[in-house]
Image 1: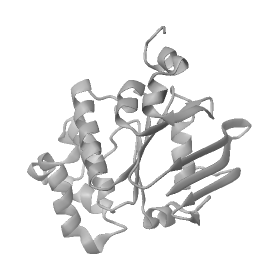
Image 2 (image 1 turned 90 degrees about the vertical axis):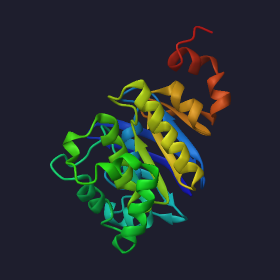
Image 3 (image 1 turned 180 degrees about the vertical axis):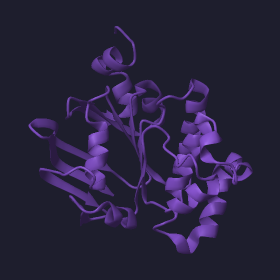
Image 4 (image 1 turned 120 degrees about the vertical axis):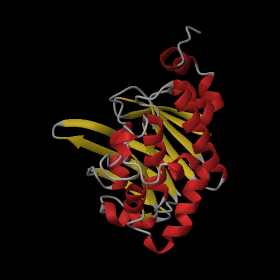
Length: 234
């Protein structure tokens, strides 16, 4: 579904990504784990066309989308849930969802009902301004807004940032339900333990490079992963 082949990205003289290659197959949950500054967000931006790719290719559904416009990429079915549960705080829940349907307005009513099935609390808050929602509800709205465009692949950036552990667990459960409904998910996340328990496969990133990859069950038993990310001295 998604193939990133040898992608390198620089911020001025600083190399942010070096020869990155990853794959995401349909209906998978694939994780990018690593510390802050490892390059996870930069990789998502490069896939979306927000950050210029210096070398390498990004392929989506068989098409080369390297350095394509974000509008083109969104229309093809790539959606991003950004870091920090970003919402338009002065707009209502409904208005935020209407913005999410910009690329797919014809199915608005059906998509809205599907979103409310996944996030019943948003139905109750439909006319409430987004800035008055709790942090967890804002994250739900951010996810729901992305789903309004009916993406083929949902990319999630730092899902757990700033949220209480209980809320993080609830959000992961929601993403799991979405995957069961057929959504493909690429998740960039610092919370390695929760993410490895959740995903099918993962790529471990350090300073702009992929240093390990594999099935999450295998990575959780890898000595370096356990030492660096899971708090184990084994």
